[in-house]
Image 1 (cartoon, rainbow, N blue to C red):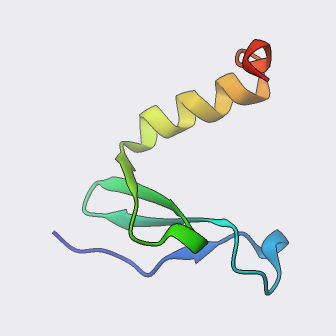
Image 2: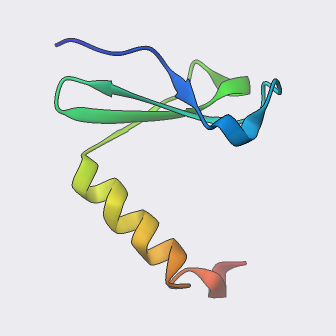
Length: 63
């Protein structure tokens, strides 16, 4: 299983507390840069569904 380097948003600047993403084979991994030993592995479709729900406000009642 091949993987790419961790990438962070250009909006993060030089700070070390941001969300990073990389591909591992056909999956995606996400982590917080300040907790680099913990990573969430998911499919691109599942992440897209989550992001769509966040943008649509589906989780606002949890705030």
